[in-house]
Each structure stands twice: as structure tokens, then as C-alpha cells.
Image (cartoon, rainbow, N blue to C red):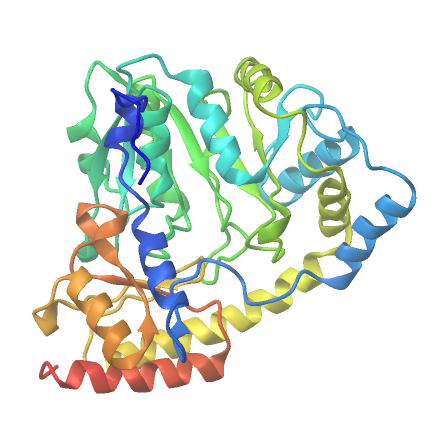
Length: 393
């Protein structure tokens, strides 16, 4: 038996305090079991369209295997600018207001490190993607939860925002369409939030990676309101809309001063996003919108089925306007989110994510992804219905 000679821990206090991802815990558990239907994965079940793959392969055949500019291919940044202008009426300069990153997650990380000093507070609208608060902490900031509730369909209300703002508040992270609730915000609702942001001179980091997956209304970005572009960092990527999760390609757009600061950090952490992935993304933006529309059509059908099914078995579930998640309440079972998810997995072999891993406001809910086939969703709902009947729902 080896005896350690280390007399102290070399881990940072930040690393010690960081909690493991609650999503990974259930993925790991489900992966060790046979016959599990997973509604836990935040990943499209579609394969990347072949013409996108071909563009990437073609770049390899032409020998484009070296580094690109640290900020990404100018041709890709130019196409991103055209896309944002045409889709969401956002105007950016490809030269100095856009950076291509290794997934949207890296864009969030670099953006926070570019704007935060130690002790700066960042408002995090919960329930939310599990990485936001951790990323704020890793950048030296202090995450401050702004809880939303099922009563307002998890929309961010102006009064909720005002209550959490202090002299130390520097920024707010938004994500609409939302992961995990699927909630979207209307133009008027976002305008109300923008007024408060401007009143308190805050920055906004808006993660809009699910923008293309909007079902009820046309997506609106908070960056398009008067006085907001100069205080907004727009984050997106190719994973969700174009079924390109494994390609790890994202981007950020915003004021030149911030983007150039992000670029400096980017330079010291990675040379560039993968070159062949950038060529694939270029093809996706130029000719991939028909593929997106087909996937959105399928997601809408699955969303409608899942919401109707949850309501039929007696669990409250609002109709989400975007993303590919539903967030039903499981409070009628008398179980906590963790208990529900663990028992459902062991007794019926259906993997869902307990809502509390997305923040305090998620307790009493589960996140179910409908980025899986309709036939699997139907079988999963049969099993969930059988499970909930044990609790007299």
C-alpha cells in the first residue's frame, strides 16, 4: 500500500467549494443501467446535416489543418454578423465585435473573466443552466440568485430583479429561451427588464443558444433595445439549432472594448476554435436553415405531446415557448425532485434531471428533454404515468 508524502492539499478554496454538476450525476447513474430511456440529455437526437460534415471534410482535404485567427475565421465572423442582422436585427462589426469560441460555454467563461473583479456580484436568474453560478465563482465574482416561479411560468419579473440589485451588482445573466424551463420572454417583458438594467447601469450577458428553437413567438434579443447593445454580451453557438454539440463551436458578440478584452484572455487559454469545425459552421450558416426548420417542426410536435401527456397524468406543466425542455411540477407526488428522479430511474428506468440542480426555484420540478424520438417519449410517458399512480396522482 502506497503512503502519500503530501502533507497539505494543493486544491484552491474555489475548487474545494465547487459542487459537482447535478446533471452529470444522473447521466453517470443512467449510463450504468440497461433499458433506460433518457430524457435528461440536453443534446439534439439529430445528426449534424451531412452537407455541414462535407464542408468540414473538404476543409481537411484542402489542407486547412492549422490555426485560424485567434478570434476565428473572418469569413465565419462575417457570416455570423449577417445572421444576427438578418434574424434578430442586431448589428455588429465582424472585425472587432465578434469572437469565435470553443462552444458557448467557453464564451460565457471568457466573458465573465473579462468583466469581473473579485467580489463583483452577478445576478443569475434561476432556475438556470448549472454552469452559470460556477462560472461566476471561478471568475472571482459572487453569484446572486434571482428566483423565478411556476406561477409566472418562470418569467423574470421587474420587481424580482430590483430586489436583488446592490451597489456591488455588476451584471446579470439571462437565458431565454430558458434551460431548464423552456420559458421565453416577450418583447414587452424584455423591454421592462432592459429599463431596470439601464437604470442601474448593469451589463447583461445573454445566452441565446436556443433562439432558433422558439415555437410561439419570434425570438427577440434584449440586445436590440435602445441603449442595450453597448451593455450586452450576446452569446450563442451551433450546438442546439444545428445539431452540432460535439463540434464545440460558439461565439460572442458585443462592444469592441469587451470583445477585445475577451480576445486577450482567449489568446492565453487556447489558440483558436477547431479549424475544421469553423468551416462546418460556415456552411451551416450559409445553407443550413432548412435543416433547422425541419428540426424545429419535429421539436414542436414532441413538445406538444409531452406537455399534453404530463397534464393527462395529473402533473402541472406549462407550455414552454422554446428550447427542448419541459419542466413539470412533481409536487403532487409528495416527493422531492431528487427522490422523484432517483426512484423513477430505479423503478421505471426513465432518466430525468431533478429541478433543484438548476437552483432553489427548481425544487418540486423535473427537467425532461424532448430531444429524443417520439416513440421513446411515448414509452417514457407510459412509465412515468405508471410511476406517478403509485403516489395517487
